[in-house]
Image (tube, rainbow, N blue to C red; front, side, top):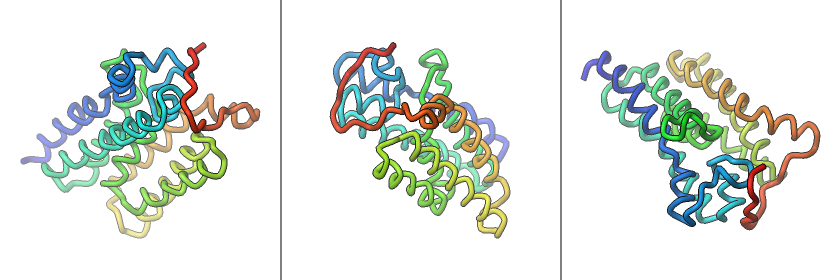
Length: 209
């Protein structure tokens, strides 16, 4: 398959896969509800955990990770050009954040970005995993997500500088360094103010305001 065709396939296919509203679908199947009407109004792991509980939340987490990995793997069968694979991963994240299926209102992109990262740069994915320790220590998912994103970005840049990755991977590094913090602006403000909600061990459905 030519790189031209790989470029043509990478963006629309990756976007449409990334845009699949897994949290919304799990809410409908699990309990016949729209999770966007509860809690923070998000469709990601945290709000599903608060609304539907652990099993549903980890189902969404696994599906969101797969949404990031699958497009990169598909494009990888077509080409070994790293910048095309990086664009596929970035587009999957954009799809998750701005999904066409739910009028461009999506999640924060962390799990989908991690899924892409596992395929694009396993070492950077391992660095991002440190964010899980932050979550375990603080119970703040947003703090773990942001710290994991920062560590992953730094790791990718270092690997590029020392020649362990092609420079094309910088496309994905920039994408997650920009999109994920932007999607967490409200969380950052609440962390600074000390009003951010911690992750709850059991589901406590609350209507979104």
